[in-house]
Image (cartoon, rainbow, N blue to C red; front, side):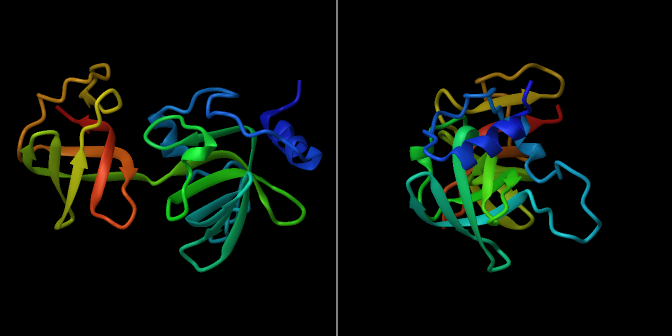
Length: 200
């Protein structure tokens, strides 16, 4: 049986791959996002991981993303059959937009292009304490900076201690410390909530 990495490699080398939705080879839940920056293979300490890329999308052509990394290095990322995409939940490729931030993991091809296994768009994972709650918005103090975190109907869930995820966020209180996994609204201090983790 071929591995997922073999499938990705052949999809790129074969060319003409159609772009499919995020769940083609298994769903990508928010909890998987914590693995976004974990090396898939052993990398020497201090050396860049060849199978990882991050940055902001500069342009999109067909199923290829041109991304400018935070270190000002350009990455060419190909999305193929089997690529999982996350943007507050599993999404289709047409949800990727210029200006979006991303993390991508996949297989580095001989020409330097990255055949993406997983792409996380605008993902943030922040901790802080709730300063205020207004309507469907949490005002989070994150290291002295206010982040407006929006509850998204049908998407946002809370996990209290060891309890299962719930769409009922009414247990969240002002001054409570929380961890929020969500999708950044580019060029703002605002985030759409995927999951709020509350220790109690």
